[in-house]
Image (cartoon, rainbow, N blue to C red):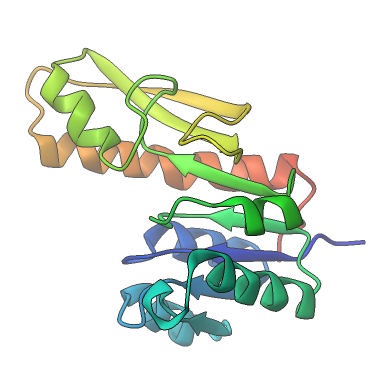
Length: 184
C-alpha cells in the first residue's frame, strides 16, 4: 500500500514543489497563512491548510489540531520542507518515527534556522544537505542521508545557497523513494 505524505512548509515551498511534481501529496500545511507555498499548492492542485500558533491558546493545542488533520487524512509520513517551527511533544508523540526533515547543512555541523548562512560565515570549504528523522532536539535526529556541497572560490553566498538548494531538490526525492513513497 502506498504511503500517504503531507508536506509542511513555512515559506516559499520550493522543496514542496519538487516533491509534489514527483509524488502524490495528500496536503500541504503551513504555519503562515500568507506563505507562498499555499499558492504553489493551489497551482499544483494540492489541498492545503494553514493556521498559526497565535490562533491557539498554546502550542499543544496548535499541534493537536495538526495531529487531527494528519489522522483525518490517514497520513503515514510527515515531510518537513522549510517548516520553521520546532516540533514539540504533542505532534512528536503522535507521529514519532514518521516525521522527516531536510536541513541545509551537513549535520551535525550548523544546526538551527540559519544553516547556510552559518556555514558561509564560518568560511567552510564545504557544507551540505541532510535529511533526518525528527526527534525532540533541534536537527539532532537520526540521519537518513546526506550529501556534501563544496563552497567554491568564486562563490557568493547566493551562488552557494543556490547549489545547496539544488542538492536538496535531488536528495529529498531520493530519500522519499527509499522510504517507500511511490512516485506518481
